[in-house]
Length: 399
Image 1: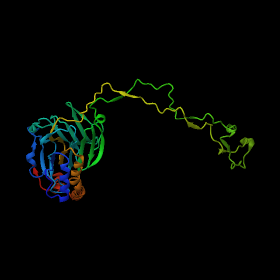
Image 2 (image 1 turned 135 degrees about the vertical axis):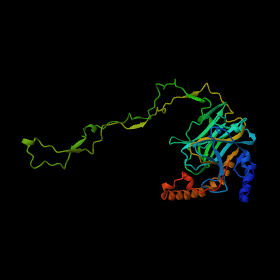
Image 3 (image 1 turned 90 degrees about the horizontal axis):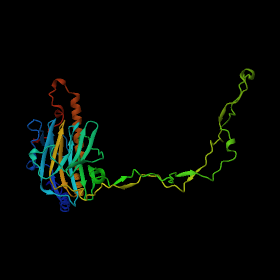
Image 4 (image 1 turned 60 degrees about the vertical axis):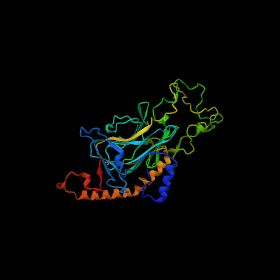
């Protein structure tokens, strides 16, 4: 795919140079002719629950020419996929999956994730039951679920990431990036900023752990874990115990009308003694026999068997979006599959992130108009068009 014609010459040359140094397996910006590369699934169509895909820049945007595909209408299943020009093996190579998504509907319950698939896929029957190699992206439902899925397939079984990785929940466009390297390390980026990283070995329960805590181990009897001990050379001063904790208050005066026959012997009130230092304790010194806090040792796990190809997927051939949404309106764009994280960052900067400020301004203007319209809204004029009345229609076509 060549650099867009409207890009400045310097940026186009930079893009060409970056592409020459990496492989772009698939890149989709939903420009003219995108329909010929995508297949809409018939999943749920016979039940009247198959959703549509609208080619649009959305209700607010940073560039009205930068269009993606948006889910519509509400309460539908959505499934669409595309096949790569040629299959891609990530053996010995870095895999980068990147795309942008915008939840214009202020999503309450629904996914915004995507899938990479290996082997043959009947795209007309692509559904939630279709096996996949990677599922990645945001999922939001209520107040509890607001996370990024990162599920990978290994020997026919799907494994989710053990960590909870937060996703964005606003109504603006965000770029999500999943990087898997040949050393089995990974990074998850949101808007080109790393949100999580680690190892496939540690953050997915794919293989048994390399090491286990030796629960049979016991702390040795002679293990001294006292970091400080009383100083044996420190002695209590001879007059220490003779110092009272309280002394008579020098300001205390016997009342003039005090009658010792009736009131008894008068005693002045007491105050804390400033010379009193409390019970004597020897000072502390470093324990020369200190060995540190004892910890249960780790031992090799006899069930662990390493797989140097843990990061490798069966050759990847398809990219798909398959989801259920209670409230539709998610807009997907700028899809990229490559082996170069730097190029992926560059693409994010020249597309979504370049238009970030302009999109926010467009959104805020749309919100102001909606709020103004709501203030003058008349219930008798309600035509059930909801938010569509408040946001301008920038033109779209439906697939």
